[in-house]
Image 1 (spheres, rainbow over the protein chains, first blue to last red):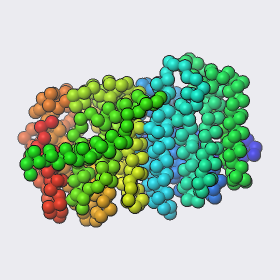
Image 2 (image 1 turned 90 degrees about the vertical axis):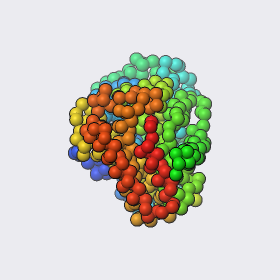
Image 3 (image 1 turned 120 degrees about the vertical axis):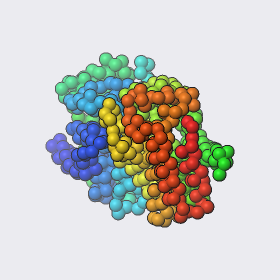
Amino acid sequence: MSASSIKTIISSYSAQVDAQLESILPLASGPAEPLFAAMRYSVFNGGKRLRPALCFAAAEAICSSDSNTAKVAAALEMIHAYSLIHDDLPAMDDDDLRRGKPTCHIQFDEATAILAGDGLQSLAFQQLCGLSEVAPSIVVELISMLSRLGGCSGMVAGQAIDLAATGTALDLEQLKVMHAHKTGALIEASVLMGAVATAQASAQQLAALSEFARAIGLAFQIQDDILDVESSTELLGKQQGSDATNQKSTYTSILGLEQARSEADALYRRSMQALDCFADKAESLRAIASFIVQRRH
Amino acid sequence: MSASSIKTIISSYSAQVDAQLESILPLASGPAEPLFAAMRYSVFNGGKRLRPALCFAAAEAICSSDSNTAKVAAALEMIHAYSLIHDDLPAMDDDDLRRGKPTCHIQFDEATAILAGDGLQSLAFQQLCGLSEVAPSIVVELISMLSRLGGCSGMVAGQAIDLAATGTALDLEQLKVMHAHKTGALIEASVLMGAVATAQASAQQLAALSEFARAIGLAFQIQDDILDVESSTELLGKQQGSDATNQKSTYTSILGLEQARSEADALYRRSMQALDCFADKAESLRAIASFIVQRRH
C-alpha cells in the first residue's frame, strides 16, 4: 500500500471518530463551561488518531467497522487525551507544548486541566455504555478491557513506573516493562476493543491481534525514541532532544541508534507475522503498522 | 433508632466494604509500588464510609444487601477517594490535612497523587465489571450511572463550578447547583446503585430513592457548612473556619446560621417523606439520614 493511500485510510477513520467526538463534546455554556472547553481543546488538538485507526482496522480484520466502532474509538481517544493532559502537568512532565500548541494547563489552568482529564476518563466509560445493537455482555467486556489496560494494571501503572525511574538508569528489560504499560497497554486495548465490539472475534483471533498490538506498540515507542534524537522540534511539535535533556533512559540511549532501528524492524516483522491468519482482511492494520515505523514525527 | 445502633449499622457496612477494598487493593510490590501505596493510603484513611453505607441501606430498602452490594460500595468509595485526592492538590484546594492526616500529595508527592486518583477512577469501573450473578445489562446500568453522576455531568462538573466561582459571591440558587453536582451527584449514585444492583428495584422505587438522595445530599452539605463555623479543627480533622478564610460562599454565609439550620431540617423531613413507600425496609436509610444531619464532624 502506498504512503498516500495509508494517509487516506487514516484520514477516513479520523473523520469518523472526530464526528463522534464532536457529538459527545459539544460546545458548552453554563457554569461548567471552562471544563468542557478544556476537554474539547485537548481532544481536538491535531492528534494523529492512531488508536482510533487501530480500532477501526481491527474491526475490519474481523468483519467490518460500524457506528459502534466509532464510539469505541472515541472512548479510546478520550482516555488517550486525558492521559496526555495529566502527563503534561507541572508535577509530571511539565510540558508547555503539545503538537505545537500550548498544553491544556497552559491554555487554561492547572486545576481545570486536572478536572478535564478526570472528566474525559469518566466520559470514555459513559460513552461505552451507550453502544447500540450489541449485547450488554460485550459492553461489559469492552469496559473491563479499557479499565484494566487504561488503568492501574496498564497505562497508569506505566506512568508510575516512568515516574519512579526518574533519575535512575533503566536496563532494557525494565524499559520494555515500562513502555508495555505506558503506551503498549492502550494500543493493545485499541486493537482488541475494535475486534471485540464486532461481537464476532474468536479467542484465536484475539490472541493474534494481541500479539500484533504488543509488537507494534513497542515498535511505536522505539520509533518515538529515534525521532527524539533524529527529528526537529518543528516536526515533532515538542522539544527535540528532550529525553537526553531530562536524562531519561530510552532505546537509543541503551541500544544506540542503529540497534534501536533494527529492534524496531524486528518488531515490525513480528507484528506482520501475527496478522497472517487474517489474510487480506488485515490490509489496513498492516498499513497502519508500516506508518508507525516509518513516521517522521 | 438510638445513636449507638446507628453507629453499629454503619460500622457493619464499613467492615464489609473495607474487606472488599482490601481484596482489590492489596499491598503491592514491583515497579509501580508507590502508586498502589498511595491508592491504599487514600482509601484507608479513616473516612466515614457514608456512601457505602447509603449503598447498603438502599439495597436493604429494596430487598437485601449481598456480596455485590459490597463491590458496588467499594467502587463508589474509590470514586470518592479519587475526587478527594485531586481536590486536595496544590492547584485545587491546596489542603495539607485530610481527616487529621497528611493529604496524599503531602504523604507521597504531587505526581503520585495525580496518578493514584486516575488509577482509583479506572479501578472503580473495573470493579463493577467483576460483579457476579447479575445480568450484564444491570452492570452496564451501574457503570452508566457511576460515569454520569461521578463524571463531567455530575461530580467533576461540580468541582469545575466550584473552581469557576472562586473569588465570586454565589447566590443561593447557584450554590445549590454547585453542591447538587459536587457532593449531591455521588450521594445520589450511592443510593441508586445500591438499589439497582439488587436487580429488583422498580422505576417508582428508584424515583423515591432519588428524591431521598437529593434532599439528604443537600442537607449533608449544609451541615458541612454549619460545622465549618461551629466545630473545632480537632474534631473536623481539617482547618475549622477555612470556608470564611477562603472567602467561599456557603449556606451559612448566605442564609446565616439559624436559617441554614432550618433549611437542613426541612430537607431532612423531605428525605424522610420520600422513604414512606418503603415502610420498615428503609430503617437503615432513615438512621443514616439522621446521622448526616446530627453529626458533629
